[in-house]
Image (cartoon, rainbow, N blue to C red):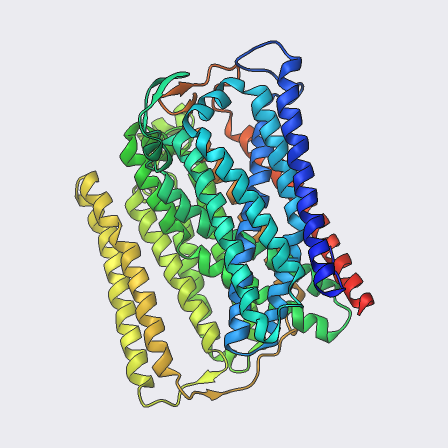
Length: 585
C-alpha cells in the first residue's frame, strides 16, 4: 500500500479504500455469524473436522493476538520516533517512523481477517460460551467495534497524510499519531477485560447460563484486568520491536549498497533498542500478573507454578534466558562498529558468567521428571544437590541478576564512543559502582533469606528485588547525564559495518519472542483447566482436558510458522509499496 499522490484528494481516497476494506471484512463476518449457526441444529458445542474445535480456535486466537500485538505495538514506537525527529530535528527519525507505519498499514487486513475468522469459529463451535459472555459483556461489543473503526480510520489517515502534514503542520500529524495509540489502547483494555474475566471472574452470581450480573464494572475491572493491561502493553511493544528488527535485518541482508546497509542497520538497532527497553521490565509485569492470579485463587496459582504446568516454566526460562543471551550478543557485536567500544571487551566475560549462571539457576526444575528407580536412587523427586535451586527464591534472584547485567551491558554500549571529561565523572562512576555492589548484595541476600522464612514472608520480600533493580537503573541514568556532559567523542558510529551474523541474531530474537508469546498464552489459558470461566462456567466439551506438553508445543510451533509466513507477505508488500513510491517520485 503506497502513500497516494495527488495531495489531500489522493490521501482521502487511500483512507476510504482502507476503511472500505475493513468494513467489507466486518460485514462478511457479521453475515456469516448471523447465518451459519442457523444451518446447524441447536447444540452447546460443535466439532470441527480433522483438527477439532479447540485446536482451530487456539490457532486462530493466537495468530490474531500476534498480529494485534504488532498493530498495537508499532504505533507506540512509531510515534516515539516521530517525536524524537521533531525534538532533535533529525529527519532520519521521521523516515524511520514512516517505515514502521508502512508495516502497520500492511498488517491491518491480516489482523481483521483473523479476528473475523475467530469470531465465526467461536459463535459456530462454542455457542454456549459465547452466550455466557454476551450476558456479561454485551454493552462492550459496540464500544469494541467503534474502537476498531476509530483506530483504523486514524491509522490510515496517519499513513496517507504523512507527506502532507510536514513543516508547520507536523503537530497535527503527531496529534493523529496520539489518536492512533489511544484507539489501540482502548481495544487492548476492552479485550483484556474479557480475557481477565475468564481467569478471575467478578461481578456475577450463579453459574453457567443461569447467572445474574451484579456489577458490569466489577466484571470489567476484574482481578487480572490491570496486570494484563500492563503486561500486554509491554509485551506488545517488545514484540513489535522484535518484528521491526527482523524486517530491518531482512532488508540489511538484501541491501545492494552501503547507504541501504547503514539505513537498515540503524533501523534494526532502534527496533531492538525499543524491544529491549520493554523487555527489561516485562518479567516484573509477569510477576505482578502471577501474584494477582495467586491472590485470586491459590489453587489456580499452584496449578500454574507447581502443578502440571511446572515443566513449561522451565522451557519458558530457557527461552527468556536465550533472549538475554541473544540481546547481549547483539550488543557485543554492535560495539565493533563503535570507535572506543573495544575498551569494554573486558566486561564480556563477567556479563556472560552472570547470564549463564542465572540461566542455569532459572532452568533448574524443583521436581525432576524421573523414573521410580531414579527417584529411589536420589532419595526423593528433588535432586539432592541442586534441588534447592528449583524454588522461587533462587529463580527470582537469578532473573534480577540477568536483568541487571543486561542493563549494564547496554549502558556500556551507550558509552562506547564517549570519554568523560567532567570533573564529576570519577565521583559519579564511583557512586554507580557502590550502588551496583549494594544492589547486588541486597538481591542475593533476599534470595538466600527466603529459604529461612515462611512462604508468605518470602513472597512479600521478593517484590523488593525488582524495586531495587528499578531504583538502581533510575539512579544510574540520572548520574549518567552529568558524568558525560560535554564528553569527548571518540568518533562517529560506523552504521552498516555489522557482521551478517548480527542480523541473524535479530531473526532469532523475533522468532523466540513470538514462540514465547504463544507458549505463555497457552499457559495463561490452560490454568483454567476444564473451565471456560473459572469456577463459573464449566467446559463440558469432549476436549475439556489439558493436552500433553508435547502436543501443546507442537501447536504453538505451527502457529509461529504460519505467523511468520504471513509476516513475510507483509514484508514483501512493504517493499513493493516502497518501490512504487520511488518510481512515482
